[in-house]
Length: 352
Image (cartoon, rainbow, N blue to C red; front, side, top):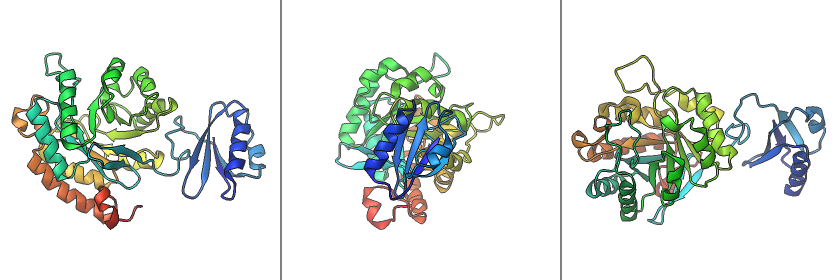
């Protein structure tokens, strides 16, 4: 249930009204937007009478939420969520609410030279975050599984060398204790419905990049995000990475229609991973441009200095030179819509 508060209501009056509602056995989520205050009621609202609420002098409107997801629902939080992340270079990166974020790096961390060189090149080209897999979920048990803790140390070294915040995938709950220096925790497609893991991530304050499962519906993705938010962590980035269909030409089928749907249904930022979606490096630039044009808040791109020699997913990785070319094009796409690429662009763009 959603309760829209009248604009003239004072904070003290809203707090008193919230306490009154909580006495009726529901949890109240307060969302203060630019133009209105919204109270989201979670729990058994069947005993709360709409007529009684509408009779209250603070209440402007009451809405019953039909969708099973509540906290991630835009009705609960009308304004876009913006996530701020500080880098070691002293710069704050923003994700969502008009900002375009780029996460780039190799599918997996292989050597010190590889990850540091990629980190330096993607930062110079305009990426705000460095990605790199250290624990790799692979279909075959004989495929390269990542360097594990050694890879994480190398990723942290690249973070120190460039100042870029780092993004890497968490495979299991017990790994959380070594992810203290990770800035964004990625939950992969295979773990999207690992509800035990999602509940645990609800108790941490790190941003979570939640990838859509390859056979998951949009509602199931939002319900997975709801698990994390129900635990108290509202710093979530949704990621469309393609779904499995009957088509075999590409690795997956990139569902670009998911972008406007997710933006309409939820207030959370939406990223797209065209690398995993297509599995073909020559398709990545076209799908990256299409994603930004469709309203995505950012991209997750695989960049490798020598894709043909990569230990993992080289066929879908672009080179640093190709990445730099793509960034120049994407900046123009972002500028057309008046969106903010990074802090340096803020003076030249109007925040939506």
